Image (cartoon, rainbow, N blue to C red; front, side):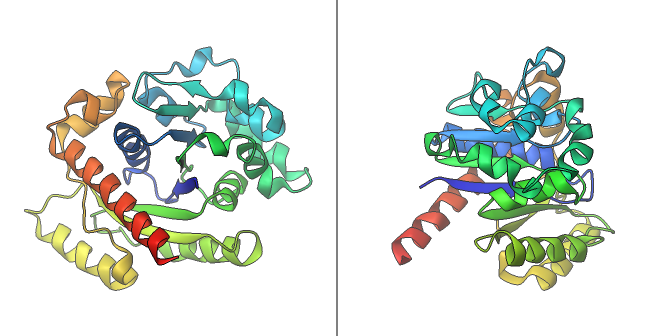
Length: 260
């Protein structure tokens, strides 16, 4: 059965898109049929996989307004087992256009239901906001991964995000859960990093992933070349961390399946 995971944090600059690209690429590398949905109007996930946003004939924006367009909007990438439903600035107007539609919070779910059987894992990169676009992503998903940068204001706004997740779970999507909290841009030499890490673990308890994502130059460079870091430099610490995280998530899902 397919698993759908949203990657979300309304705070920008926390490694959300980097996580979406590299985690999805890692799942593909591990042999899982993977779809990555770019729900951010900036389209950084799309360009981070080497796709020119300006040349798109169809995008997630078109799919939200006409669910039957999803097959023609999905693009194959040059990376193992990885497809993308791309985005561009057209999505910026979706909030207004969706507002007047019936069942506006479930448009993405209706579209993805048509094709989800083709994939083992679907990842959704959410915009840094908690509007209708993010609501659509959360209504679709089984769980959320929350990337958090190890900085002074790391926990700022997280209570609002968790409140939104609980509201979506209560109102629209009872299966929605927190997959885990991911510490990003980690520099273990800094005392601040250690202090923030402890605070996050107090707040989220056992939901914090043991694997953390280090701050590396290669992770920052690879999107500029339109390549996930495991293809840009597979020996890089960041590449190994994302691959390990993917393996950990797969093992956890395997244990959950056995328990059922």
